[in-house]
Length: 310
Image (cartoon, rainbow, N blue to C red):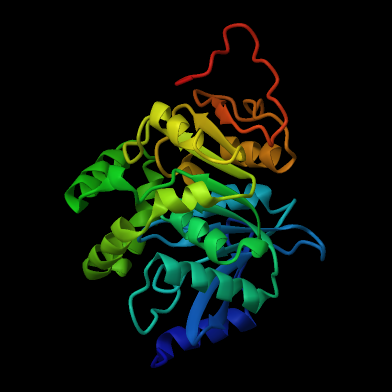
């Protein structure tokens, strides 16, 4: 791929003078398979477990930072912009889901990471499923937040309508984060990648997962089927899937409800029952709606704490 002098110059300046963004993670660059890759990372001591956050369709990792930062004290954290997204360079040809999973593995190789927990939002969830299919020995656990790309989002005009409705349910500040990413990604890339997502066997790959998996849904997410359908799918798996519902959340939970999501992830990583976070007061509440038997049994909820969709 022909180098972009402006991007290369910026990358070299960033390497000499890494800046500390508001998120508290360090911005930096590397090169993977000839493509400049921009990423954010924490500075944990050696030996901390690795957690890598993968972004959604057309976006960069920027909107994942609110949740990633809350977890960065406990995990060696990476938030890359996958090739073709955000500030990273474009590959020589358009990537599909398997290509993006391979790119994520290449990024981890470049960082010397042999095993990680992957946290994905939206399109990042099929990428995680493909990563698990190709590199099962390298994945400790999976966190699938608002998994998208299945039949519920087809055809493209339906997905556009769903995204439009979701935009009105996200925090207003999300618009300033997402708009530059979508504009840079462009219409041709959007159409190509959407077609690739519709051909990807998301459900088949999900049912193949054999590692502890946390699925997090928002009850206001217009891109996903209802909790009953999610429970039906989860029940087909090999007792390792834990499904959690965040009331009041739409699709971009990593951005809109970072406290609740980070709390649920921490409990999942400890194999503890998922309960509401007392440190994140407000209208949002977190509930388990499905738990496989490989996890410890959930403690009963207090009277009046029924499970939505259960």
